[in-house]
Amino acid sequence: MSFFELLNNTPKIFGFLGIFLSLITIVAFIFNFGFKFRIIGATIFSLLLSLSSWAFMQSYSENVIVEGARYVPIVYDNGFDLIIARAEDDFPEEAIEPTLQQLSDNLRKGSRSGANVKIKIRKLEKISNEISKPVIIGEIEKTVSMN
View 1 (cartoon, helix red, strand yellow):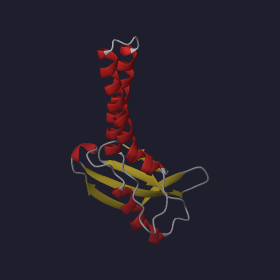
View 2: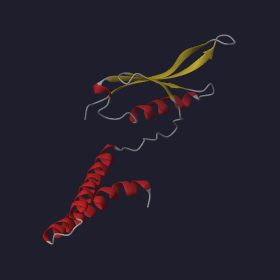
View 3: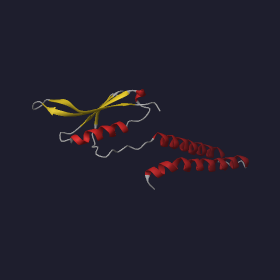
View 4: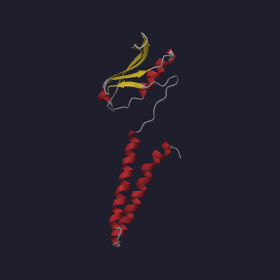
């Protein structure tokens, strides 16, 4: 079973376990078994696990992969309206647009308070031995909706 199949099945598994333990809890109270208060904790915990795994499943989204895009690490993110990624010196020019599109598509919806986010890719251009300056090689702007 893959991770994504397990992720989809986990709320159901814990939900059925919680329902089963609820039935055992009712029987334990009817027949006054000594473990009735312990089973309440297990029942509530399994139902809580079911709800929290369902919430995680709702918030989880896979990364979008755009053909032709290259990996660029994000070196600056102010959390609101600016993201800067660093490209290597040998970064091909034909990979700029797909990489920007991939970075844009992987922004989480509902984050950044609905701002217009500028995503930039930059290289470092050497000026002298120990000094370099950033050069923007690509930029895209994305409006992030709150939905």
